[in-house]
Amino acid sequence: MQNDIAIKVKNVTKVYHLYDKPQDRFKEALHPFRKSYHHDFYATNDISFEIKKGETVGIIGKNGAGKSTLLKMITGVLTPTSGNIQVNGKIASLLELGAGFNPEMTGLENIYLNGTLMGFSQQEMEPKIEAILEFADIGEFIHQPVKVYSSGMFARLAFSVAINVEPDILIVDEVLSVGDARFQGKSIKRMEEIKNTGTTILFVSHAIEQIKRFCTSSIWIDNGEVKMIGSPAVIGDKYTGSLHLESISSSSGSTNNKEHIYVGAIGKINKFDLNKSLFKSFEELSVKVIYEVFDDDVSDLLIGIAIYDNERNYIFGPNTYLEKFSINTEKGKHSISYAIPSIALLAGKYFIDIGLFTDKGIVNLDYYQSALEFTIESEYFTEGLVYLEHNWSKND
Image (cartoon, rainbow, N blue to C red; front, top):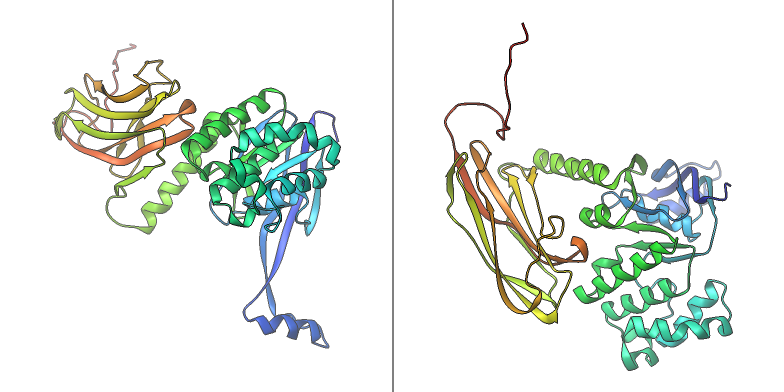
């Protein structure tokens, strides 16, 4: 394998034998003529790709697409049915919460156990203990059996061990879906640090915006196969579009059900208003958002406002970080206004999402899907979804 390659996956297939009834397994094993009672399920099917050292690669795909199976084969937890995987470097992984931890042992004992599994002696782990304990921040629970830990404490300790053993390759599977906003923000900052030192990172998340903002490339896994490899922004949009098409085909009516996701701890959105609900094309649209900060100062706080059409097509979604607009981040209640002086959308129903984030938009604090809705009426002067400035000219 080339020295600049961290992981090489070549024609990897993982097949499971599935049985309709438990007894069919025994009937198959004992049948004198080897009659088959199972059918094959391909968790992965002929997957191939290479990841270079220092890359941060986002793995995306629906539940059951084969992502976790692939990562388990890369880490050596599972063996491929066929194909070959080569890994160049020491791996630290967070695949399943608590994997590699003994529930009867204390947190501190499990730190040493995980170090041993990675090839470190107790003496080699000693200098790392202080940093692990400081990041995990679980206090006296470090001396208690991990079976009494909450899921958040478990995640903090497991993540702290993984990032402080100086791995060549770090694999994280949905780690940011566990824990509060402070933990998520601290985790992303630490991952940015080790990313900048040249550590190769495989990052699995259902939050496509996290993949777009954090990763340098992306692999889309679909039905056990590699569907696409490339830019996180391009693949993220195509993947999101595919989910949208599926939701349209499997349901009727508007897909814009309201949803509120609140992570909490640092801040929240208190109120939002739209200047009116019925517009004509090219009128001014304005949104007012009142939000509250609970910490003394959250320097990387940002607000995003996105517009979707009635079928949940993403039309426009600026945020204060990307546009370098400074909002109030100190403790207390604050208000911000967002305006489109001349909205160029054509007739139809539209929806507005509003979100409060940190860490460049990776960590979600409070998110309202379809928070506001409005309708645009317009005369029949053109066709399509949006009016674009244009010119006609004669060439003869």
